[in-house]
Length: 140
Image (cartoon, rainbow, N blue to C red; front, top):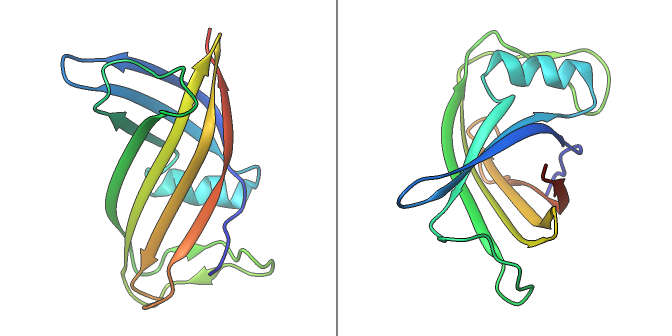
């Protein structure tokens, strides 16, 4: 399964409603061409939510944030070549489905844990793309 490059959370906010806790995040990949591409699709910022009423501090029962998103990359878009070299110009619209899950716990002012991003892309049928890892967010 292909792996994606590392993204970084540049900034974000957390809000609580009557039903959920939402986290709004702005990310950066560390690569200018990928950041530009993400901005062009509106994927530079995103939100995740949990039905939990409080953020857990218990490692055996982490808070789970989730987001599912469907979007389309328009025909003619210049897709950064993740292997290096020239950008790929898409010959047709490409449908993308993604599911992001982050599980973490709060310790002092640090919220940390693991994440999993699974994407399916119509241009690559039967080839899911997954990236997993750890995260740390310091709250102020």
